[in-house]
Amino acid sequence: MTELATYIANFKRQHPTYQDQDIAAYAFGGGEVMADELAALVVAGHKQGTTSLYQAYEVENEPLPKVGDVCVILDGKGRPTSVVINTAIEVLPFNDVTAHHALLESEGDRTLAYWRRAYIDFFTHAYTAESGIKFTLATLVVFEKFQLLYK
Image (cartoon, rainbow, N blue to C red; front, top):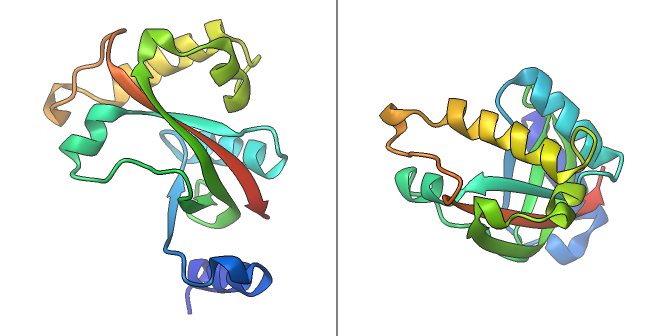
């Protein structure tokens, strides 16, 4: 059994309500260092939200996240660190993200100004012309609010 499978089995044993739940696993950000930092914020209970590009789901033929989705958060080396459940999903233009959203993400100094700079940089570099995604300030984003269930 892999480390991830063992982690999920232990979670389900301690939380039988989720016994039949499909559980995805992902790391935040772009790279090992960022994934480690953001996973640590989740484990500490600070990070309670994340943002992704709406277009990425279409291009990658992935379903949009839903309320009730349960996910394992991975560190930069792909090791499980925690389990979260989505409690709210919002699709909105990038420019409509609020200071509250930025606070829930808990990155940097937790301000909207920091959040905007970081995400403009991330989206601009992560999604190039080859990806079929063009980022602008009006681009739709998906904001997931989540709750820590297990660490």
